[in-house]
Image (cartoon, rainbow, N blue to C red; front, side, top):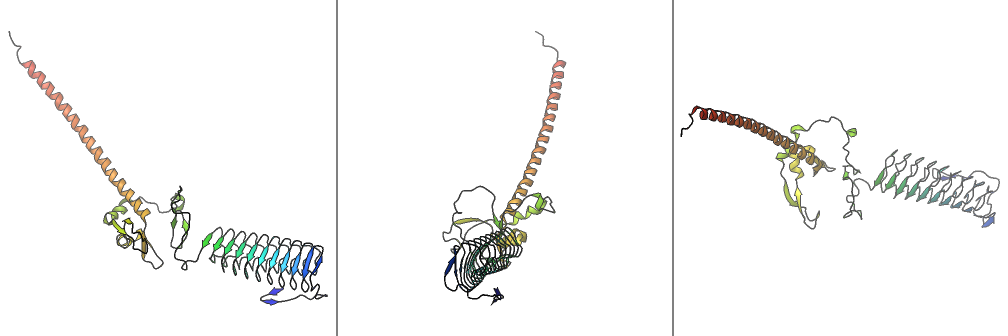
Length: 343
């Protein structure tokens, strides 16, 4: 058995059992003390102490010194590499390829580990998939995690349902997808997105590289206040036309928008910054909200002016009607004061 990098063999009464290939009850054995305690069937053990303590476990394959050493009743496990699945006892349907892959697994089921020390610390975790040296190396009881790449998911311990591709992950994290390391990769290309027709909500990215949808529900907000005059600053912004530099857009398509550095001088809260704290882009979503506020303010002014105009017009109409009535009355009186014409 491997402990802290040292191979330890338990004392036994018989040694060098079946050094040459032999077969018994559909078992295949080659190696010192391989399958020495076995009563199971359809097992294959190649290497010293491979499947050493197996009793009734069946359909196991152990290739390498100490592979599946501690297995007793576990079934349908495949271990290829020295000390792979070394401590497995009753775990089932595990596949370990690489030195010490799934070494400490005891009762975990349906795990797949490929690479030196992949899932090495896993004990009871199940349905994990790790490919790469030390991938998911510190996972103990986390379930249904996927890690691809050297040290991928190495920081995960007990979290479930994580996908780590080229990322070490975060201890205790659950149901998270991480691709690449912040500060290592500086560009992302994904086929099948550009030009694809889809309905939904715009996706945003924060300074940590996290993707998501900006929430608008009251459940996520506090200190809610009417915007009021906060949008007056829009009048100080300078809309521009421009072209991106060739390294950004080789086609040089004409663009319309704002300059982040200019916006920062008007209101620093309207810009997003890069890792160095420099203005990187404009928060156009916030600008749009301010534009709506300005539109509504102007709309209310127009509405009020319309009401005032209509009120004055109605008042003037009443005055006209009053004057008209007065004129008609005077006209009638004048007509009555003249004697009738004589023929």
